[in-house]
Image (tube, rainbow, N blue to C red; front, side, top):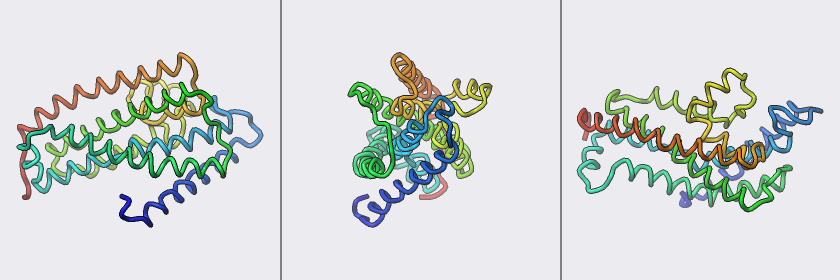
Length: 249
């Protein structure tokens, strides 16, 4: 990723521009109001900034990589190698995410703090809980990607599902709009889905939207979904290996 320096440095600038656009948008939406959806204007700015920073960590394309390997027949070689194919994909995504977090998000966040007013956590424990939360968000998002990728074994061409999944995750995870801005009945539906654990909960921890015991409740929700998503992965993977059909190679 560092080999293409222009892409790397321009990516940091684009990150700052993106946050800047959201900053002025929400400043206009708030106007003279002190708070909306349980967040002050300063908290909203921090929420948006950290939501996109966290996305650079938890986001990965392992579902697309799996789909391509299945279509090209390369997955057959992967399956006979002496390691867990799904675990390798998860670790590849983790390595890429860790790089983007350290060398892309952190410099971008530093740049944004000089340009806009952000409310940063004033407690080391909150920072620690936030990093635990974004790690759990990486696991949840990656597990959803694994499920999407494995379904290629059955659908053969999974492009439409992957595009739909990306839109659903960005919208319902709270990346574009905090979940507290949705109607109450829809919030109840989203609270029973894993998407809140991807962006909304880590961003609320960082911005101070939730405090004290609410933080631990959020981490518990994320941990439960990390475990629950392993169940469909296991059963779908068992079926998928029996249904393997190579189209290329």
